[in-house]
Length: 140
Image (cartoon, rainbow, N blue to C red):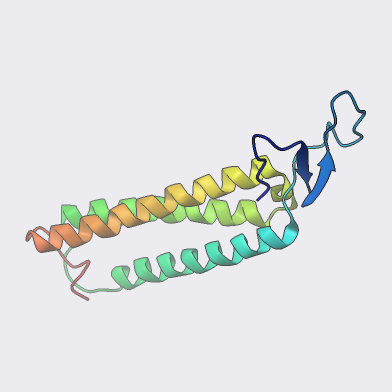
């Protein structure tokens, strides 16, 4: 991810530093900041693994026999919305447009929001089970 230090006199474009001299004509001045493709590939791999884990977790819950309670429904809804955001981030990262820093940052924010929702859903299921309100979610 290109990080620009406040006291730096350089801009990062496509992983390469370009001088930003005052008043100098910069041919890439109108070009959006871009991330390096290898950096995107690492993010894509990590997000893909987390999405697969989240889907596996939800599918295990769906295959557990028994009756559901309201606390289970809350947990599953939070996890499902979280997984949807993670999948959207994964789809955005698969696009070539994601090499633009703005698009990449938006995809990462969607992924992190999805990760938080999945975590909230799992925590809700755990605490519901601890306090005796849980149904089948953690009993499989």
